[in-house]
Image (cartoon, rainbow, N blue to C red; front, top):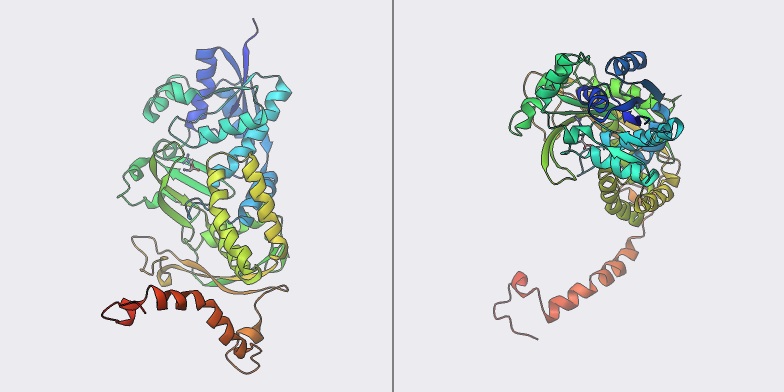
Amino acid sequence: MTKKRVVLAYSGGLDTSVAVHWLGEKLDADVIALSVDVGQGGNPEALRSKALQSGAVDALVVDARSEMAEGFVAPAIRANGLYEGKYPLVSSLSRPVIVKHLVAAARRTGAEAVAHGCTGKGNDQVRFEVGTRALAPDLEILAPARIWGMTRQDCVVYAERNEIPVDATNEKIYSIDENLWGRAIECGQMEDPWEATPEDAYVLTRPTAREPTEIVIEFEHGLPVSIDGRPLALYELISEMTSVVGSYGWGRIDMVENRRVGIKSREAYECPAALAILLAHRDLEDLTLERDVAHEKLRLESRWAELVYDGMWFSPLKEALDAFVSSTQQHVTGEVRLRMVPGSAGRSEHGEPPVGSAALGSAAVAGRRSPVSLYEHDLATYGPGDAFRHDDAEGFVTLFGLGIATWAARQGGREIRGDRDGSRR
Ligand code: ARG
């Protein structure tokens, strides 16, 4: 009988390295390790040899950085994708990219199953599996980390016993997921939501900048296309923003989030580029979107983010919302000026001075302009040249308040007016 052939989504981390070996040992499977470069850094060759050393029969590496940027991060920018208003969907966006390549590799190699290294407690299992079922309902899906019953510590021991290479000690303390849109950090002492996230958990947002700076981000149809007049591919633009904004120690998120599987978890993220780009994009929308469109978009954005978070990237509702968002972005074109201020002068978003050893800086929008701006100076000004027709306001306000005036006369408003007896007229 031929062996079962499995394509495993391989990150090179502890769980997937153990998974390569475990699938071979327990299921007698031939494991093809597939690593998808979504901008997490690291050396593809090293990843390949690590997979082979861990027991894979073959190891494939796909460079999907541009695809991740253009096909997955771009819609998230246009939709201002923030789960629960805070988390820019870092891991949620990379999973459908990986799923696409996992399914393609399974087809190419004739594998009958795909596998992932996610545990049963997280969102990523949902994203991998629902995504795979949307694209290839016939493929079997294996989730070794959900059934092997090992703790993180057990995995470290398993790895040592089976000569599976495991990286730096940090990998044992924190569970990290990284891509070009940011970095997610879990585990360690952060599992106590009262404990501050240790400074050493942060890598992209170490505050090293000493001087304030300004950059101008240009957007076309809702997507950033240049920094300070230099046109850049989206992938490069995001990388540059990560280093510039990150050097101010700005872009950290510390939150308790609601996972799809029903548990609350404490998460730390560093997403300097994502938060800065979303800040700028939303600001440009304020300038260029008509009011009703802006308000309706705001309502649908949280639904969009929820769908993506929940692993419904490949779903008809997500597709329909994308079409709506797309139509809103036609005139989101223009420039936003971002100002970054370093260290001790920086204030947190609540205005307190920085806490602890790291003096975190700040980033904020300093200005915006657009050739299709809906801001009309002559209508807005309180100075000379005011073109607003003040007389029109009187009739407008009277009719706008007519219903309330009627209500006040017949039914309500008596206590507020100070009427004592409350008698009806
Ligand atoms: N909680 C985030 C999400 O569900 C991140 C998950 C991956 N994080 C990690 N450190 N492995 O999207």
